[in-house]
Each structure stands twice: as structure tokens, then as C-alpha cells.
Length: 289
Image (cartoon, rainbow, N blue to C red):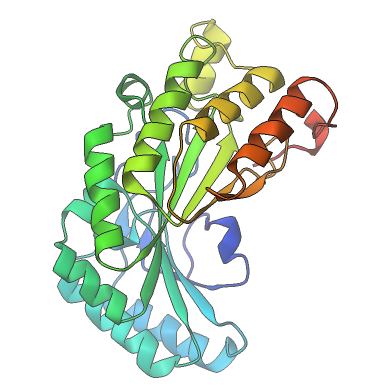
């Protein structure tokens, strides 16, 4: 496989074939993210992509999922993405699901009908970083989108029949904006109603703008208790018709896996116990990105 730079994928794609069709991220301006700071965004040439599909056909016959890398594979024009998915279907018929990262910029470039075409060709899940539903926070972290567009683009993915996994970041609003961030994130998650929500806890990465703000004293990082309170408020304000709310990433202080609405009240009670000190939290040395 022809990999360039660092390769990132969601935790749920750990056992997937990783097919790199772009390098870097087309936005690459978020203040908290250092994943692609050393990578220039580019679209790989068709010959290289097809050669990697041929390689996977020979050597990846036990893997039933495939993930399109890097940070913004969905931004490929439809006329280039359709043949790639068609080749995956033809040459890797055992692959049952193709996934990709998606941001509002890339989703907006495609109609619901075009997204549905990709769904028919095997693209069955998209991972979108909401980070926060609070417009003030989205501006501060330079996300490049507001909550209204997040809702519209998330709904477009769902309307096309593609499953949607949304990431939110606990602590991203600092201490001062924590409660508003939690409430507003719940509002946006409810409006989109995704199949999956993944909550991560902010871990500052050296070299990023947000880390610099923290060093300069202009950003206050919430502690474990503030993170748990934020998570509790967010879940309280999130109503999903039938979705999984995960907070079991290695960065989190308290692993949670809840089916909403079924497990909502039990999860809120668990958080009450944790805040009262009756549940052990993950120690700092065991947290990671």
C-alpha cells in the first residue's frame, strides 16, 4: 500500500483495510488538532489508488471493512469517487462496509442524491467531527462551520441512508463556556439524530493553537469533575430516537456506553455516583489519544 504521512482512522475502524485516497485535511485549521499539521492536502492519483485496491485484493481477504483515508476523502469529486467505490465492490466483494471522515465542506459539495449513489456503492458510514454545538465555540476553535450547517449536513448524510457517527469534545469550551457548550451540543445532536455519538475528553497537543492559548493562560482546561458535569449536561439535553452514545475513548475519565433513550436515566445516575466519588475514574497516566 502506498501510504504518505501519518494515517489516522476512527477507533471502530481498527481492523479495516486503510485505503489512502487523499493526504492531510482540506481544512486543517482547527485550533485543537495537530493530526495533519505536517501534511499538505492532496488527492492521490487514480493509478496509485487502483494499485492499492489490487494489493488489498491479494493481501487483505480477511478484512470485511474498508476505511477511506485521510481526513477528508469525501471531498473527492463524484466522478472520481464513484469509480473508486465501484472498484472496491468489484475487486473486494467480501468488504461489507466502506467508511470515511466527512466535514460540512465535503458534504455540502454533494447532493443527497449523490450521497445516496455512494451509499449504493458501499459507503455505509461517515464520521463527522461536530466538536461542539455552540457557535461561539465553533468560531473560537476555527472549525469552519456553524451549528446550523452542521445540522443541515448531518441530516443530508442521514437522508442518503449513510450511517452517521458524530464526535463531540468535552472540555473544548474551557471552564467558562462548559455548560453552554454541553447544552448546545445536546441540542445539535438531537436535531441531527445520528446513529452514533462519540464523546472524547480534550487532551491538549503541543504545537497546536489551543495548547499555546493554555500555556499563555487564555484557555482554562476543565478538570475531571468539570468534564463529568459537562458530559452529564450534554446527555441530559440529548434525545436520540435510537442511537448509541459512547464516552469510552481512552481520553475519558469514565467509560460510558449508552443506548438512548433506553439507558439515559441510568447513565445520568451513574454520572451522579461518579461526581459523588462513588465510582473510580480512569487515572491520568492511563488516558490517551
